Image 1 (cartoon, rainbow, N blue to C red):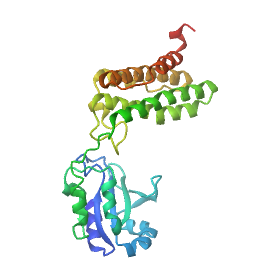
Image 2 (spheres, rainbow, N blue to C red):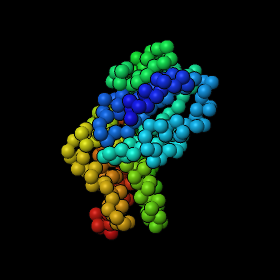
Image 3 (cartoon, rainbow, N blue to C red):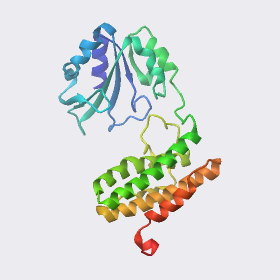
Image 4 (cartoon, helix red, strand yellow):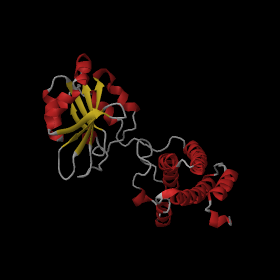
Length: 275
């Protein structure tokens, strides 16, 4: 698929470059990976090309799905084995090539990212500046303060929704907010921050967290029903409190220790508080 797309781009005068901004450029691609491609177009052809992008994409295989994803650019799925292949296209104007320097890209090599440069070397020159770029948090203390604040805020939010009987709102917020920030804090504690910007919160936690931390994280997976969510909420609060305290002690960072103590007691299962 990748060969077909690049070959077609090289023969299409409207296209002046193709970059791989996904796992391929990071050296992590395998048989389960998707393709994430930046397609650069001549300014004069941009609007017409983007209007008819699905027709262009159909030439590469049996196109099972073609739509604009929630990120605002085209997502596709092609028939393939062992699993249908996801290919994400992001189209850009030639005049905006240098915007790539502002994105959270850090390829392992120029060759891993630049699949085709028909822009007189402009794409290659930009990507050279991205190779080895640090994606670590710019200000770890500020990142901790925000993550810590969000964690305790949303723990209370989920508890309140659960008490009101809005179990599905509580469950959604638990996964999208509480676990998002808890996972980030765990990665910060483990020093797994090389791919901090532009990566999922759970990136490679199985390979980076200490076994004890990973076991505690597993306990935060809620079982069905309100009681299961309540137990998971309590486990997340206990783990979050330990991680926040450990990071604060290690770096001398302030954190809402009193709030954490009150929230952890509030979120404890009734049997643990004698109720």
